[in-house]
Length: 162
Image 1 (cartoon, one colour):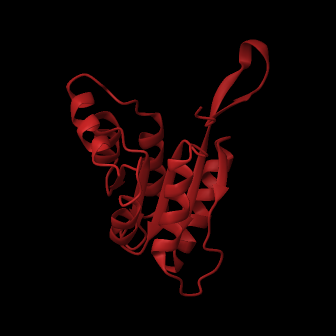
Image 2 (cartoon, rainbow, N blue to C red):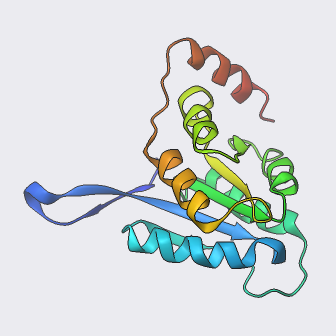
């Protein structure tokens, strides 16, 4: 069973906390570090899947780590960052159960959750300021999948998983 919601607080103040996995290559390292601080300040449970420095690394390795955590129900959502976000989104979408979206606006974050039930957010550090990243993340995490006519479409995507 999906073990991605964690309880915090007590009794009447009890609320659910999402576990979020964050990964980046060297091009996204600095933005990743800011995102980790931001998410932690919002009381999310956060797992850092690397990278851990500005040293050159291969971005697919981090997409695999976060994607497998989604696939294995270890995290609720993933956030992946590289220079453009393109390589991360291509790599992550190769993993079953992952619906990764490269997002560059708050509106796109809203629509990808609402219509596509995306579970991995990909960001391009070259094109995304810290402020914009935080706004995109907030929208992505608070938006619920609409269902309805979109359920059929998402199920078609899920059937592509092999």
